[in-house]
Amino acid sequence: MKLNPFNGKWSNGLFPLFVVLPTTVATIYFGLLASDVYVSEAKFVVHSPEKPAVSGIGAALAGAAGISSAGNEAFAAKAYVESRDALRSIDKNGAFRKAYENGNIWIGQRFGTLGFGDSFEQLYKYYLNKVKIDTDVTTSISTLTVRAYSAEDARIINEQILRMAENTINRMNERSRADMVKFALNEVDDAKRQSREAGAALAEFRNRRGVVDPELQATAKLQAISQLQDKLITARTQLNQLRRFTPMNPQIPAIETQIATLESEIASQSTSLTGGSTSLAANSAQYQRLFVENEFADKQLAVALASLQEARNDARRQQVYVQRIAQPNLPDSPIEPLRLRGILATFALGLLAWGIASMLVAGIREHAQ
Figure 1 (cartoon, rainbow, N blue to C red):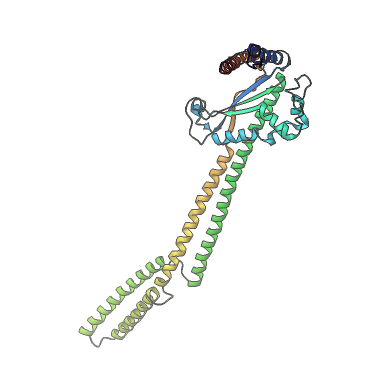
Figure 2: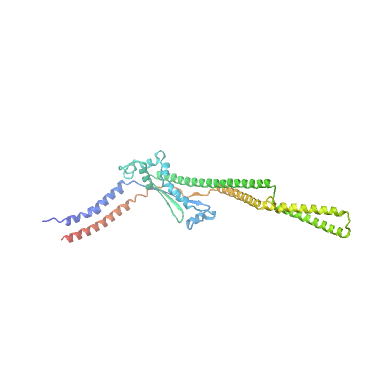
């Protein structure tokens, strides 16, 4: 008689395989082996006075102070906490390793056991499983969670990491303020150089052409020419009257000489005003260009100095800082593992697997018959 592998004996063995065995293993693990895990939490928010406040709890935290959350800095702090540099800082003198290599910790949870090695990269992977930092994008509140096998270790590590996050924000803040002042100083130096060059060019032009301000000098010359023309008109009128009424008057030659002198002076003044390459009219265009460049350089220097003062004032104020909402707590009891829940979940999953397997075996037996 041919043996059917799907007889009742095989079917009856499914319940111990899928239910009894896993539940027994789970009971042994959760009841006897698994070490207690203490969880320490801290909450903080990164504030900045420049950015608009967010909605919800973030806006309530900003309040009347006019401050708001700084999302980029919060994510930068998260990136640093989850970095190898952070682990190196925490593990100075092997402090982090000691907390997780304790002989009281079950071998399956202890670091450096079960043949996985104790290299820094292995420690880093282990670190990422024990330290979590999550940032709520709505409220901008960051939650730092540390899992350890003693309450004091969990709190100490949490405090160290939180302090490192604060130091990271402070370093970024200092760098930002230093860069801001440095940039403003560079702008002032450039503006000073341009102002000096523009002033020197204007002074050199004045010395070379012998002019101070062509427009003012032209105005003065026009006034002088106008006065000379008035005198010339008066002299010509007087000469005409003398020639008409007293042709032999001895004053006529003197007035004629005066008229010639006035005409010569008017011609000379007119030539210096509009005639030739050295006239005021010829110098005016270049002077105006140099004068405008000098004025612009002076205004640019004034703006740069004002920006430098503003940058220094901003540097005196802390732009971004960490505000703790909840300090790292000292847990008074372990919250992991969830022993009863783990055993019941294993039992429920075992029942589900046993039910599916029984249906499959029953279907195969029926097909075989």
